Length: 237
Image (cartoon, rainbow, N blue to C red):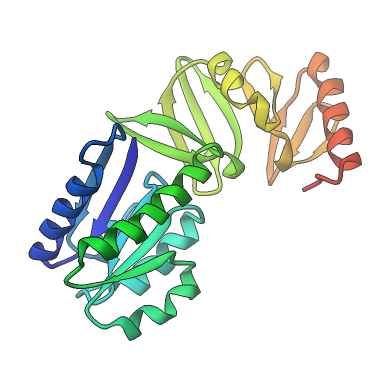
């Protein structure tokens, strides 16, 4: 599922984007969803990294597309951003927020097909480094590199990340099976840590960022060996 968002105050422009997407995906097996926001402020309020591609109109009231992109980048370094504009010169500053491209309104299908196709390929290349979690009836993608650790409380998993905490239903065993190939290790029956964020191993805890995570006696040696192995391979924090 490709999760797409658009922030645009022009209804006609949004409807045109809907038609362009329908035409692009017609006959393809790929599934996608489109979430519409009236402006940049609406999109960035309580923003979470859950989209693969975001279309941003540059000229909008309250918060324009460039301001919204800067705010998004502080929380999400992976999402693909494409600007929509009636004046191409405004899109030149897109490099400041690592925008992939821009589309000039009214958007032609020929231009859309080329640039959106590039965005889809770009987003797909990053999918292997994200995991999907479900929260409150919706789903979102978390960049693996930004997960510090995961703890289990009763039947809930709490993902501690660079952006904050996310709670979902699940078991630690399921999380371990999904994340072990990315260098995650159990430090107890209640916690799974991302080794790339482990700063040190002490008597009864390991240091992950500023958090002290309790480590079991049995797991302490495994964590120490894994940490030493990372440093020997030049993969220290």
